[in-house]
Image (cartoon, helix red, strand yellow):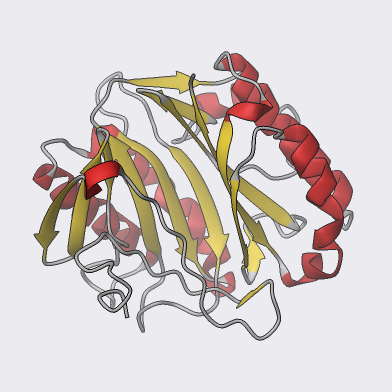
Length: 283
């Protein structure tokens, strides 16, 4: 299919989802392009692409699908490290990871903290941004977790508006690298109390989530119009009212943005109806 569309030899990540927002649609494709296509290297795990010093990795599965959750997660990071070596860098260059697991293994997810702490950030380095999404349709039988990951060969700078909760976590609200700000997944979580807010109210959750994103943008010296890409993960319960947040989104991010909306089985916080993963660009 990719070759027929003229996309042969590109970096590919497959994400199984609960469904797509539009009824009857079975496949959606998100494309990132770069003049000349960047530097591409084929590996046994897929194609690694370096474009503008950003390193795009193929979707990552654990090497041992019979292992437990923590071991599978560590394996995914090990694979990411091997792929990054191809690009002349390492795990300390990661700027964002998106982790996929299932509702049944939600309670296991905190076990990823140890391998992240041991393998990411480097000595005095920068932890990447992160998002955790629950999908009950694994891309491979036996996979308890699988990852999307992106890195940068530019120096990394953490971006945090002063939220102390991140002092003990293995990810940052945002990571600036070159002219790009890579941000974590955001939901309706009060950064001070660490409590989910606006349970059951999609519009209020979206407003709170977008405000958190804008706070990180401001810390980086940017405004809402710097956002160029949004990936919004919705729970099935959010679908009926999802169209109602469109105007709010446009007011918060008025510069024009690429939007990808997918329906996941659930989010790590059961109260969440939406999680948003943004990317912004410095002028």
